Length: 129
Image (cartoon, rainbow, N blue to C red; front, top):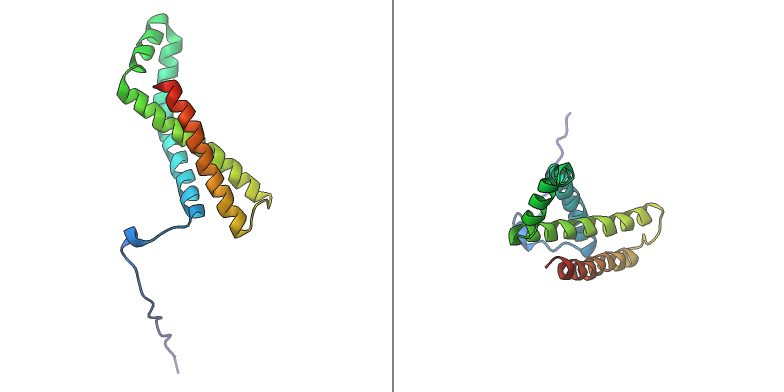
């Protein structure tokens, strides 16, 4: 005789905006998203580097482009992505060697990463704008 397994009747929350993720998950997701953003923007950054190194006119062109506010905003976003990816990467490497692996220490290190990004971005914004 074949016995069918009964499906578990669990409640399902399909409204993703009501889910509150812990700070560890937010830092981890932002680490991945910043990595994707930095990877996708690489061709544009390499092209601007090539253009600036090709001639004096190319360098002048890149410098004038970087003086416009939309480009400054893009550079600010890219700097935030870079610093978050850098600091969260160091955090992940530390966790790979079993440092700060308890839940309380992981939450603390996540908050430290967010604060370090915020402080670094204050300096970057002051320097760019």
